[in-house]
Image (tube, rainbow, N blue to C red; front, side, top):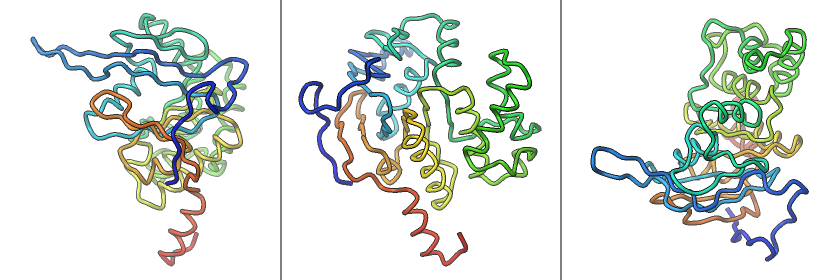
Length: 267
């Protein structure tokens, strides 16, 4: 991975979009109390992510990366500091207000897929739109489009048990995309997948970032997964230790082709 330090604003940084950065964390701390012991999961995090970036957040267990993901996803809120998402301060909003933000602005992809077992791929993808009160005809059209976008137009009526692990993760990605969110959060999205399928999923995420301009944040502990991102943020002890641009991000499509060729299997 060829990396260069991220330039501060005004020092060679890419110009911001008219709406400003999509994500801006300033002095974010998160402290949990266990009995009489205070655990500082995040200790003064400053982080800005521009619209259209593909960022990997990497760190060992206990580094703070999962706490960061929870705050970015409005599943938790900072003890101190500010979190501005799409121009709105959301860090100190109540549970109901943050739930609205999640539904409107954020798509989630999890390691465990979290698909409804007895529900078809199409119905799983429609679910976020049901919560929004979108009419049935529009729900169906948008879900069909999202599944086609991830290459599953021929698996609409399959249940999760009838799909491979990679296909299930593609359904999960389609579900995350169906609301047209500006931000996609992927928490260990390849953790349950083999190498070949991992590259398939990463190639899809790279294409969505490149072609649709979706901002994607991937949380991972695997360096080969982080190598596919154009920016890598390393956490340790609740702090950002390194923040670098990856000038030559690994092309997951090429890595997939190389993996298939090395295995001697059909693509």
